[in-house]
Every structure is written in structure tokens, then in C-alpha cells.
Length: 142
Image (cartoon, rainbow, N blue to C red; front, side, top):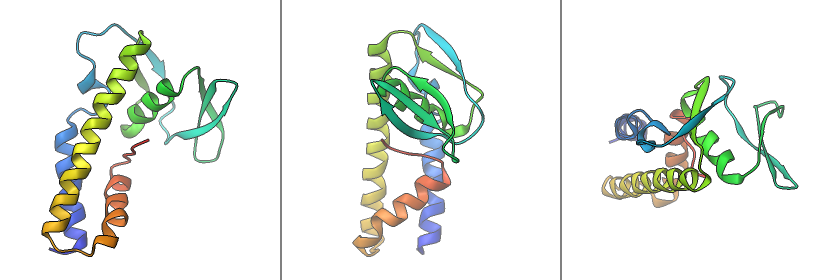
């Protein structure tokens, strides 16, 4: 199998495994509120006095949040560029959803690595290939 085929295979597998994505798969019978987001890729900006900023690709501030957990939650939620995101009202449920999602991503990375080793690719290429897969899916692990 060539690298390009390997990447496409894992893009399809991950899309299937993530289902409706984050956070929908991780919000079962939890009281939530909605936050509006612009339909643009976001990244973590600076932290100043306990306020965390999400910025767009040009560095413009999009939203400021009072916790790193909320920032991560919205970054993970923004993968498919929704206009609105449901977020748990209780801080501990935000942290729990993030933890469960990150465990899912970590398990996927382990599966990719096992398959990568079976295909006999050069080990030093693993990070590059994984980055390509994640980039195609607009997926990140913070």
C-alpha cells in the first residue's frame, strides 16, 4: 500500500468512527447551552489573566473564554465548522466530554500506528503521515 492510499483509508475510517463528531457523541442527557461560532477554522490564541482566546487564521479574536477546558471544547467542536455548538452548563461535564473525546482520538492514533507498522513504512514518517490524515479531517489533539 502506498502512503496516499494509507492516508485515504484512515481518513475514511476516522470519519466513520467519529460518527456525528464532537460534541454530539459525548452529550447524552446533559443540560447544555448554545454558543454561536463563525464558520471558520479556529485556533488557540493567547491566555491573559485566566481568559483564553480563540482566533481565526488571520489572528483576529473570535471568542474569549474563562477556561482552557471551554477553549479546547470549542476547538474540538469546530472541526466541522458549525454555526452553533452545544456546551454543557457544568464545568466538570465539559472536562469529562473532553477527556472521553481525547481518549477516542488517542485510541485512533494507536490503531493508525499499528497499521502503519504492519505496512512496513519507515517509522520516521509516522508523524508526517498522521499529520496529513488529521489535516484532511481538520482534526487536532490538544
